[in-house]
Every structure is written in structure tokens, then in C-alpha cells.
Length: 287
Image (cartoon, rainbow, N blue to C red):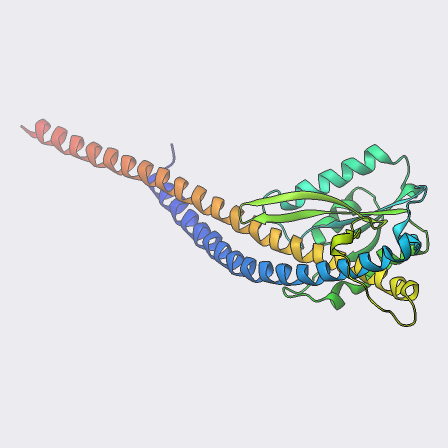
């Protein structure tokens, strides 16, 4: 049985841990609010861009064609995997990585059939430890990252599809639902399939030099924008997951402190009782 000194030291260490996890929870809560705001603001931009691109693609009775809109036989698949640069976020990283690794094992017979693009140090380390080549990686993104910070990753992923080095591109990340709920999301980014415009909501635009040329420039921008939007969404989910994990850790630390305090009080009571018994026994022996 541990001594009172050991129990007291354990209580002290648990209290220090609780202070740290509580501070991390508060920091993540503050970051979550900012991340939510940025993600919502950017969603308005992508919705408008989708409307414009859909209007062009649906023009001329759908006669306008573009490789990014057309499905082709799949010889090589691309996976854009979004993780964090650090852990302490519950199952945030593990759920995504296990899912993607399972897909690769299930769908592909060799490494020539896929390419992996990774955001976050945790994901990069995961794939390298399993001898899976990472085509492009983005790590150490600033807290308030901008499109320029991920531009090279987004453009390479989209560019490989445009040059037919991959035939489809999936994004796998945690979608922010609420502060206590993050949803694993597997989205087929390319070929684009979410830009159809219903006639009742369509708007007629005039383009210079012509709609095909405008579409040629807008589609890669739109696809890259979807990647950036997913990164903003995943960042909000990361802060939410870390906030929840730190709250759970704080609650667990409090529970352990309560149990150890009870054990300490019981041990102290037992020691006092033992001392009293020894005093009474000694007095009785002197009579």
C-alpha cells in the first residue's frame, strides 16, 4: 500500500496535470471560435464560385466540356489526407489515418496505383512508418493560415489530375459538425460532380473572351478552393476535438484527485488511530 507521502506527491502531480489540460482546453476553445468564423466566411465564397462555374458548365445546353468534369477510366487514384501537426486531440488523427490506410490496402495491389498527399506531421509520420511514399506534404501551417500557405499542395494535386497522372482525387478529413462532434468525411474532389445548376436558379452571364476559356481558368481555381475550404473545416474540427479531449482529461484528473484525497485521508486517519492505540497501550502498561 502506498505511503501518505507517495499519495500526497501523486495528488500534487495530478493537480499540475489538471492545470495544464484546463489551460489547453481554454486555448482550444478560443481557437475554435476563430476557426469556425473563418470556415463559415469561406463557405460563402465557394458557394458563389460553384454557382458561377455551374452556370457556365450548364451553358449552351451543356455542350461545354472540360476534362475536370468528365469521368475517365481509373488507373491511379490520389488521396489528400488532412491531419494535425500534433496529437492530444482524441481520435481526430487516428480515425482518418486508419480509414485511409484501410482504403489503400483494400483497393490497391501496388504503390503504382495511388498517390498520397498529406497535411500535418502526424499523417506524414504515419505513412512514412508504413513505407508509403508521400507525394507532397504540408506541415507547420500557421494558426491563421492563408491560401498561399497551401497553394503548392493544392495546385500539385489538381495539376496531377489535369495532366492525367491521377484519374480521381479523394479528400479524407474530419468535418466540423459541432464542438463535440466531428464527422469523418471521404469526398471525391475530382472529377468535379457538385457544380450542377438547376434551371430555376441559373443566371445568365456574358464572358470575355468566351465561356470555355473562362471555365478553363475557373475550374482549377474552384478545385483548389475546395481543398482550402476543407483545410479550414478540418482545422475547426481539430480544435473542437482537442478541446473535448482536454476537457475529458481535466475531468479524469479531478476524479483521480478525489480518489487519492480519500485514500490520503483514510491513511491519515488510520495513522492517527494507530498512534492513539499505541499511546493508550503504553499508558496501560505503566499502570
